Structures are given as structure tokens and as C-alpha cells.
Image (cartoon, rainbow, N blue to C red; front, top):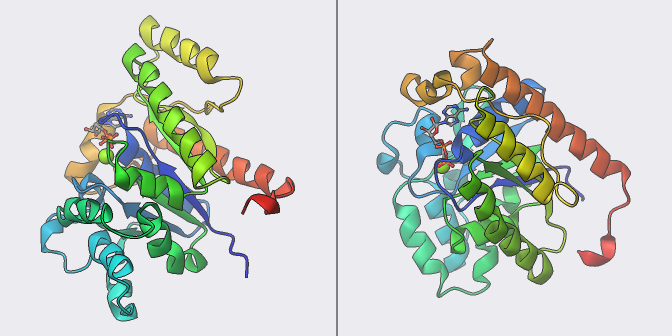
Length: 278
Ligand code: ADP
Ligand code: MG
């Protein structure tokens, strides 16, 4: 049976560009439009888990790490345990992570089909969700490769600085390689400009440079996420931007982004799928 679930990796090897903020707030925005959403925290630093109001991730019994270990050892899956892994935050579900995920990443190196462990781990969840968002860690290591192999598409948050725009080359290169060698159906949904301060000429220049640099082949979302101190407050108050500042510019932007993402999905559905590549 073909599932309708779309798995989107939120990736950029640079830290602090808004991946986690985007995973949580885009997730909540998509759920507000009626989609069932699961977020997977694939970063051992677990800021996504903390943003979803889990204050002590290291005390959790079941996290992404345990689920991936099951997959690696080939043990029979304990479905009660798997369901225990899922936590709720506002209108979305979450598979949390904690520090043990860094050990899991190391263990990946000695395991069979090491690039597709996450893909196999999330397979059972696809039937229950419309969208699965994977919050990636800031590296191009084995965990990010796993996310890009598990994903149908990728969203690339990018800060408006020349260094960030330059760093995209490396990421796009890796994505192209994964697409060529392991996951031919991987799409780039687009580059998302985050923390944009439209008052500074610098930000505007860089946004234009980015659109020129990647524009022809790669989508740059029309929606830009503005910089706002309200966004930085969210983890402290344990709310998404929709809970914390529902009428503010960042909530408005993530709501717009959700519309764009759903629009991309509709477009993809009318296009015939390249069955031969699967
Ligand atoms: P990443 O996951 O790429 O490391 P984060 O989402 O954790 O990035 O964001 C890095 C920092 O920037 C965090 O402190 C976060 O609160 C802040 N931040 C994210 N988005 C915005 C925004 N739109 N405006 C202001 N600060 C933001
Ligand atoms: Mg993060």
C-alpha cells in the first residue's frame, strides 16, 4: 500500500541557522492546517526535544537512540516500547533524543547498510502521519546522511550571511551525492532564509545573492523568517511561536511557510512519479 506520508529533513551542517526552530514551528504550523505531524530529533544535543518542553531528556527511557539500536541489532521490535517513544507537544508528536544518540552514531559505522538505519527505523511511523520532519544535527556526518536517506525531501534553513551562503555549496554537494548513490527520489524543497532583518541592507543583498546563486535550479522559499527576540524566548517558556506570540511576525511567517510546503506537495502529486527510480 502506498502511503501518503512525506518525510522532510531540515538540514544544514552549520549550527545556529534555525533548523530546530523551523522543525518545531513549521511542524506546529502544518498541524494547524490539519496535517498529522511527527518530529524526529536526530541531534544528540537534543535542543528540539527541549523546545518541545521535555526538560530532562537524559532521563527518558526510550528515545530515537533506542529505536535505532533495535534496528541495528535486528532484535524483534517491542511495539509497546516503540509507542512509548512518542511524546506530545502542542498539536504535534515527537520522537525525542538525548546524549545517547552520539553513541548510536558511532555504532552506525560498524553496522550493515549503515546509511539506511534511520529510514528503516521510521518506516513503521509513516502510516500514521502526513508529515515527518527530521531535525538534523549540525554536521554532514553519518546521522545527517541517515536523515537524507530517510527523507523524501529536504528544507535548508540559511542565515543571511555570506559565509552561510558559501557553506551551502558543501551541503548541496552532499545532497547531490546521496541522491546519485543512495536515494534517487530525494528532492530539495527549498532554501529557507531565517533570522532575516529586513532593515539592514546587508540581509537584503545576501538574500538577493542567494537567490541568484541557487535560484535557477533550487527553490528559495518566498517566505522569509524574520529575526525576532520572541523566537528566542520560545524554549524558555516551553511553547511554540504560535503559543508564545501568535500574532507576531515569526508566527505569521511560519504559517505562510506551511502553506508553501503544502503547495509543493500538491504540485508533486499531479506530476507523474518516476517509478523506475525507486
Ligand atoms: P540550529 O538548530 O540550526 O542550530 P536553532 O533553531 O537552534 O538553530 O536557532 C539558533 C538560535 O537562534 C536559537 O537561540 C534560536 O532561539 C534563535 N533563533 C531561531 N530563529 C530565530 C528568529 N527567527 N529570530 C531570532 N532568533 C532566532
Ligand atoms: Mg538544532
